[in-house]
Length: 403
Image (tube, rainbow, N blue to C red):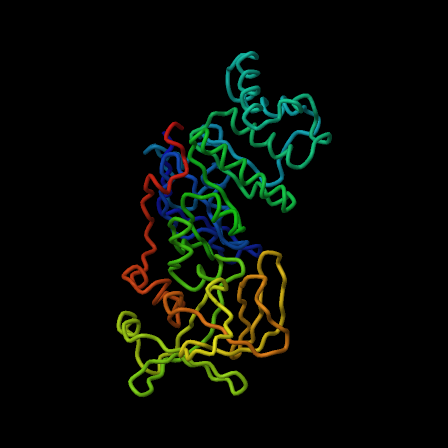
């Protein structure tokens, strides 16, 4: 088993001058299913680590409840919770060998014999491929090996839930990518319910069954990575997911000769993009309404085709960033800077005007309060954004059926 329910969790702290309170987590409701890999994603200070510490028992919730397999564990001590935590800074004892670090928790909290503890350590070391460093101390191994030791220390506990607090942030870029794969492989093998905290949207997109996006202590949206990416519930989520991030432009809905057009006032770089009447009707837009439009960089194409196209726009190319397999083109669009992600064979010269296009199906529209009015697509899913948790299907769950 290992179903975790966070029920209306609130955690507040008294300010330094003792005159008020800061709400770090605000009425959080999340259910993490058995065997699920859930990522808590958000910027620094959004409440994701505080949430994890409340789950672990390292912080006491102000109000709300935490349940593991329907058992209320809100007031249980960390030792009473069948959970194992992996920290950002490894938290290894420098005077102990890798094997001693991995077995220390078992020695302190269980009555297992020496042989039983050694067998668990050997099994975990085999899973993490660190059998050859079990007799070495932390100072004698690399950062990646330290993280494997920390993961092994969690594995030997055989817990109901793994809690991981930005475990890869201290590693270099290449090693982070390698350890992402290792953690995914570990999750497939063990099938343990896992809650993973990160501010890195690449980790969230590549590793999770579902993403829970937090901001200012509040849950913004929860769903599969693909759903949250293509159908963000608001502008914050849309801008936080994606690399490079989504392009935004403040526009107004106009009507000319019976056609609807999104316009942005700029004398040097006028912008006018026609949209279908269906979009206007489905979003319940009115002429003169102020909106924010959003387009992802990969949905923009540079074109030199002379064929008439009402959707074609013109912009000044400010900077070209070669990225190897593709290039990032920074365009001056009306009063904003946009990024287009294009193939590296696209010919473009800095300081010159270029033409670009994007499809209405790729267009996102947001109201003044940031709420999504339209996401990717033109079908029903584009106009009915739902922030409620998505059920996990057998095709989206990453846990192997044998696990």
